[in-house]
Structure formats: structure tokens, C-alpha cells
Amino acid sequence: MADYQALRQQLEQKRQEILQRLNEIQETWHRPVDVDLEEQSLELENEDVLTELDREGMEELNQIDRALERMDNGTYGICRLCGAPISDERLQALPYTDVCKVCAPDAEKLGV
Ligand SMILES: [Zn+2]
Image 1 (cartoon, rainbow, N blue to C red):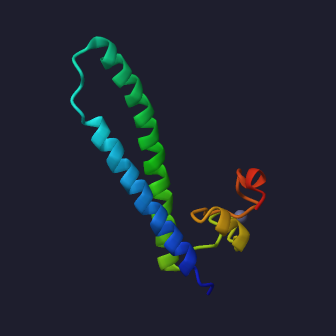
Image 2 (cartoon, protein in one colour):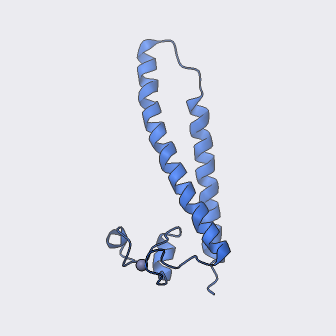
């Protein structure tokens, strides 16, 4: 079985970064709302952006968690859809992918 130690470290580091970012978002979010009306509408706009970031972060975190799980149970690097091995180049570029180049909708964009 291939040694994915470097990729695992990469995933765990990325995971920490996302967790930290989500924490910062949460802190910003729970700031008391300013009573000034103009400021308040600005705050609301910011909150929309934060919600979007939050959602993206959670999604990425999920993908990383699933990749780490697959590393643990030995299915990492194998295409979820066709069962073919995922190329090392693709795993390097997208460590939490679970589909091969053939099955992935984003393969063309990445080129791996
Ligand atoms: Zn496939």
C-alpha cells in the first residue's frame, strides 16, 4: 500500500487552518450588533459573506475528514465511482478527492 504520510500531514494542517478560520468567523459573528442603522446594514452584508465562508469551510472540513477516514480504512486513493486508483499527481493537487480523473467533473480544470 502506498505511503500517504505526507498527504495526511497536509490534510491535517489544512484541517487546522479551516478550524481556525471558522473560529474567527464565529467570533466575528457573535460581536454585539451596532445600534447605528447604517452600521447595522453593513454588518448584515458582512454576515451574508461570513455565512458563505462558513458553509464553504464546513464543506471542505467534511471532505478532509472523509479523506482521513479513507486513509485509516485503506480506501484512500481509490475512485469512489469506478474503483480505479487515483493518480498520485491528482492526489497531490487535490488531496481530499475521492474520484479519479475519468469520473471527476473538475479533472479538466485541474488537468490531473
Ligand atoms: Zn473513477
